[in-house]
Image (cartoon, rainbow, N blue to C red):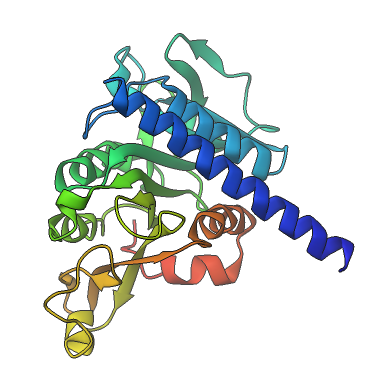
Length: 286
């Protein structure tokens, strides 16, 4: 075995170890009543554990924190203005101001924002997308604020969602998957991850993938979709029409490698990897 292969295996084992630790913290907090089906408190250990994972995995030049986006949250002091995970340029970012709720980081230095929710359901998807869409003014080219001059998220900015658990009670309901497809106005949103399903194969994570196409994907897949297939299987959402030439569909599939793939996808987006960014180029121009 080459040193490179050995290093890759070691990293994969570390990634899976982090996944297990995050889930253990989540399940313990859920049992203790610290977490509901829709809300994880700010500064909770579930979120900090995921940040630890990313800090270990990503290059040192990148910072990982919870906090606020300047100038987006200027004047706000409530927890609602805080984002769960902000990945930023730690070398070029000005010394970030700290609040008790987290760091304040300038928009120009922010490369990615991730929102973490306890379970995958229609309400948590709506909450996550709504919070991410508060950044839309900073996604437009030439965005400005009166007090702070030019303010814009960089061209390689991305965002995504993370859900700790898919509950057995939700496995028949595809509403959340369809709601997640409603993201055409989000810059470089690529879907996200479900850490575990409350059912068979607890080692598998769910990949939430955005499919952009020139025609409804469901028409291509009608013969592949069976009526008894649930969210515990490989499924797609109803297709949403963006315009006459573009449609969005969300897919959900499960595999034991998807947690590591999610981390490598983030690293690829940071590097501008063509394989990772190709599917994002179809997003609505901003």
